[in-house]
Length: 64
Image 1: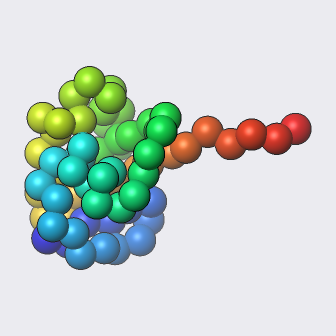
Image 2: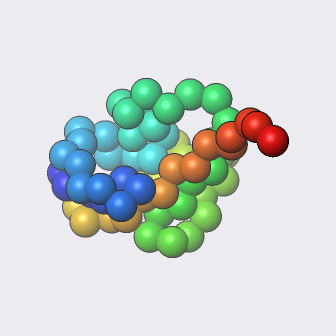
């Protein structure tokens, strides 16, 4: 299915947000949103993805 991740189109096999994070190699603490709606970590396994969804994945950055 085709979805947009952080503004770029991708072809993915994952059907849930949790599966997408695993498929794309995201580990650790990240913030997620699907179609501009925040998705808490506890709900990522049940958050279904559909063709055309827009997903944002944000990781904290260190520095100063």
